[in-house]
Length: 445
Image (cartoon, rainbow, N blue to C red; front, side):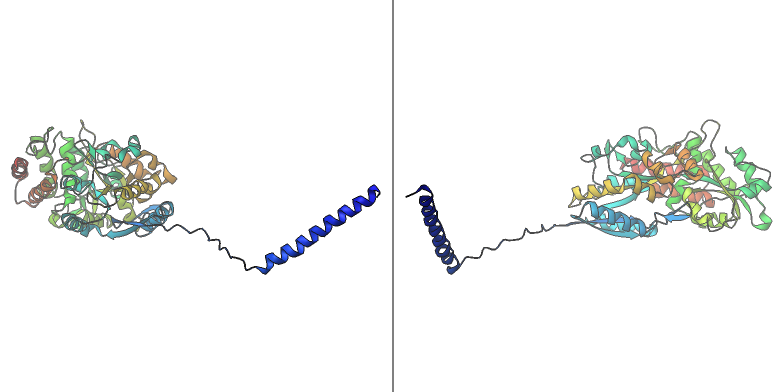
């Protein structure tokens, strides 16, 4: 057999074997029922949401480049929308409460052991809320913040016994608001810088009682707003204080404090350069008079310009609260912070929201006056205007109310005594003696 023939026979046999295997094997494979294997799709993980509640005050907003920003509910909705994008596992429920209802709603809820997980709180209430146990200490969280970015006075307003209880959001200070046109017609090209002499001189020149125009507005209504009026600013610039340096006794019966309150009351009762009926007036009432050009000067914050914008022909000016030759100016530090409920079930989630809402962009948007951190001051040109700059300048002279367990009880005593002095029920010295005695009794408890 030749070699080529042998090769052909070999290939034939291989081909036959392969064909048989193909026909028999494949036929057998197709003839058997096959098990169907289902491939499961990967499951989408279910997000278990934790719900936190946020209570805040209704915010009127501010005008920036002709636009209203930071107003409720636009601000709150924007914050929540952005926050839930970043933290889809956290649900936030917001409640916006009018200012006049805020304190009662807070205290009622906290005393019942309930209330929101996160809440906005003004400086005035900070001592009472902290020492009443409403606010959770932020010592376990605060290292996540750049505390050097915050105004020191704002941090101190929400700190007690070395611990931080709130993240400051904004700083509010009163300013001297004055009518440029009325001052110009009276022969002045600037606001008064010092009391008593300049304040009295300017006030007399601006007063035209026959047409119902007065030089300066005096608040006498017994509300917390009375703490921020000229009289206490003048106590501070005169070297006085509410409490001694060790916080152990009230010193409002000092000659410096009595002199300041006496001048405040004399503007109304002796010199008659303030509109009568001061016991019925709070800051809002005076703002209305100022817009109507019935008073030439009064104390209000930068946030008043939202209302001034409704009267375009109003020529208003803003300046530092008048002080003395020794102390150029002084004001009580106002402002707001975001705090955590001491009874919150979700401290980690609450902190994430607090940290988020205190970012410079949100702080800048919400602040009606000026933000409490330096980095927020340059956000989007929101604070490049003169009202913001003069507020920043005034904040250098701002002092918070005493951080003391009894501050919450001191406030109504001070307010009552000063209101009675304005109304003539007590003389300024009698009022200060009564306030001092009452507060010292409180401090002994």
